[in-house]
Image 1 (cartoon, rainbow, N blue to C red):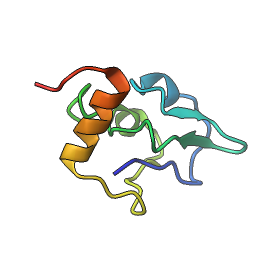
Image 2 (cartoon, one colour; image 1 turned 90 degrees about the vertical axis):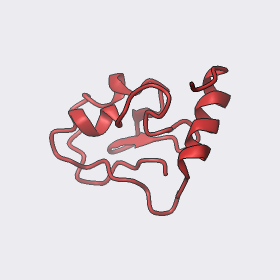
Image 3 (cartoon, helix red, strand yellow; image 1 turned 30 degrees about the vertical axis):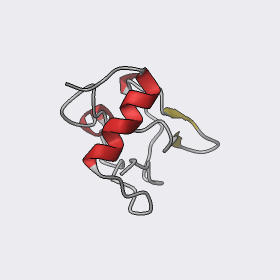
Length: 85
């Protein structure tokens, strides 16, 4: 699943620089995540870095964008041109 930033976001700016895929950007009112670039840090880290640094816990999995581990790995490989493992 791609992650999503909810409206509890306080625009603290800590999540954007943590994303290795540059999937997070400033939206009109809150930060947003590009689901086409979000791999939940698969291929980079063991857990999503944005979730780790978020002080208000407003970055859950997007229930409308379910992806398997294999799909996230394939997205990582497509985005980076690197194989996992």
